[in-house]
Length: 223
Image (cartoon, rainbow, N blue to C red; front, side):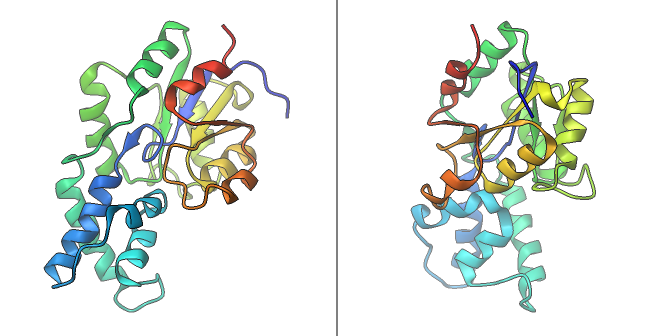
């Protein structure tokens, strides 16, 4: 599909707009400390943040979804994370300036995240809406029956923004983001500053463009 200059830019949330890894990793280490285990280095947990609870529980405890204890530990992790989700999470440097520039250019922007709304919405309120930045669409992990990499969340966001998919770019830091974007017919942009577990492998995810920091997105847009 050919792409023209965007009328809307959709963003993943964790690892793209918000650096939430400190609290995600912190929740795992809270669990380990409670269980009498030493905390793991932040650098070892950070790459797993892009894949959420499943990957973090594997990194922190060696648990996999088919293990008997997985579901209970996942609930425990989410409860701990819910309490501390805004303790250290913050917008990546340059995000506010990027959003200001997009709004000045008349470009709509929205959020498509696999994070469930009960976790995502309070963070969006605190970090964005509370600063007078209002996305035209917010699609969370429980907004559609199938999350990313299925294209349904991106298609819903485009519909909510009243913009055709061919006029949307999608910016994310995960393979699921790139797959969903391509399948939905949007232009995929890879945020390399996010939580990529393997920077070399990420080159095969099919991104049309890559950015090393949020403000680099502006260099891809027509003046």
